[in-house]
Image (cartoon, rainbow, N blue to C red; front, side):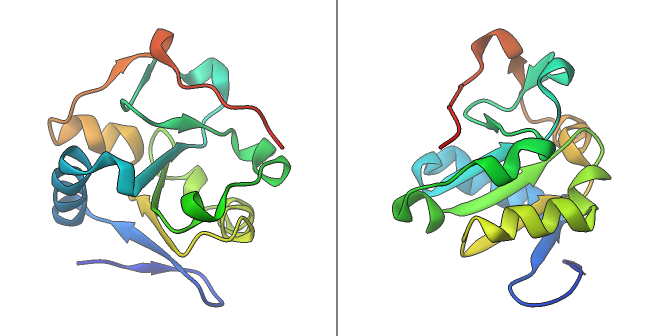
Length: 130
């Protein structure tokens, strides 16, 4: 079951275990259709989901994405799901213009608990703000 977080449209949808498993299968088949954004601070990233972008919560407002990227399905996560539920995080992510945004209800800990792989943070995909 999916629960919707906070306020005005568009909304961010929480991914429970079943929904996250479904997402992971789609992501593994066609990763180019998705953006996984990790909102943890850079110093927290000892491990990461392969292909994810590290975009710390406090820096979201400094970023912009191409129209192509804004049309991708976006999944955000932190460590446990708490920070991605903050209204400030939600507002900042939505302000970037993404069409479909989801949040891992239990963060990267949920991803690992469900048996999906993570990699060392030494393989980070780094991007620069606008």
